[in-house]
Image 1 (tube, helix red, strand yellow):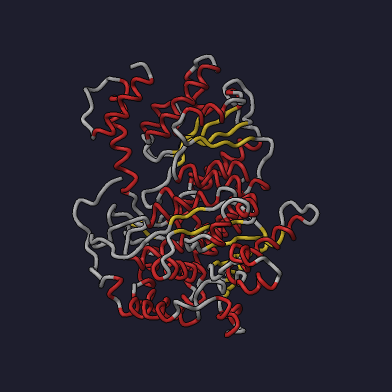
Image 2 (cartoon, rainbow, N blue to C red; image 1 turned 45 degrees about the horizontal axis):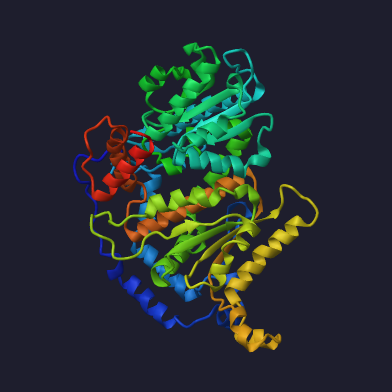
Length: 554
């Protein structure tokens, strides 16, 4: 990560909590403090219609079970306008360097722009370069899928293993699971990210090195965790392939910009796929970082996914805020976090293929907006990012839904569901969707003590069976999980994060909080083996280093 040499020039804005729009929302929240969703629905028969919206690809978002009214949304929209949201959106799409701490543009939208688009960064149209990489990726993917690419011994590739960490792993791994129904089933796809050797050992245990291709994803080709795993993979492959270093070029490709280090590793730079400084790691799954995804689903399906991304990009860029899915989702999140005091967000996809979606969003949201300093360098005086968590469907109902329904924390929920199943077996889909709708209904309306008592429950038991309700949720209902749908869904959350970061006045596109621990780890590594002098840490860290060394007999 590089820092601009001098402080960037940008307008110092009025603190968020000093804006009249913010204070109006505080007053409104006080007035609404005793409002219950039961009463909101009774008093407004048109509520479901007025607080729902349809977006690209028939994506339908019903946020009527959030603890908002039309007045709440009007006040939130005024806050968005006062925060300069429109200007910030335009600046991002125009290629302005809105990542001010690194002096970079933020243009993941260029990764899915059509060939006919024109997007400028430093007076250069970046779209041709994007499509040149996509074309090369497509040719490579076709060669693996067709079997024309042969390993060192002449065997075709049967196993593709992506090596990366953070956005270089979470995006491709999530996309593979999400689009598994569309993948080439004659090739296995695996993902190695953890520097824990177990991750590598288990992912390669049943693989034939002669049939295995590694995709090493590291922009600098120096990322400690990724390169540790890549070098282990290199040793593993060479040991099985007779030690001939020429084998590396047949079993390794790189997603990187460091041609020198890629070549030194033994990879043919013709098989190096690059991306750009204006692509942040957590926004990169539709760049060359998605090479494993393209190999898995094929270039045509990957293009379809990019089309879904672009549809949501254009919706976000052109649609008035009052009808704009990412904006409305972001504003509801602002209300929950900053006015209702919610500290977490549960993302609950009712589709097994989205098993890793919540994990993906953890990085997207928490690395983007988990910040304590505003763009002008002052400490924030308001909450920024909730903790994101969740898991698919009915599994969660038998794990943590108890806490969401009857626990003390307020946990807003995003339910994600699809009308048409990818595996239409019996009545499974009806049962699945019934659970989505029932859970959202139960969270909103609960079950009163009088209702429990009317059912004949013993007085001593009745309170245990009462549900307060008034637990907010949004339901996103899409026709079917397709590559295009996945693109729209990811872009929806990407732009939501941007809107919230803009309103909170923070930089959603740097991640300095990732760095300190990594720097200290580099210092500790030689101390664990005794290669460095006696460490000078705090007493706890020194004690733990000593215990570890003793445990390893050092």
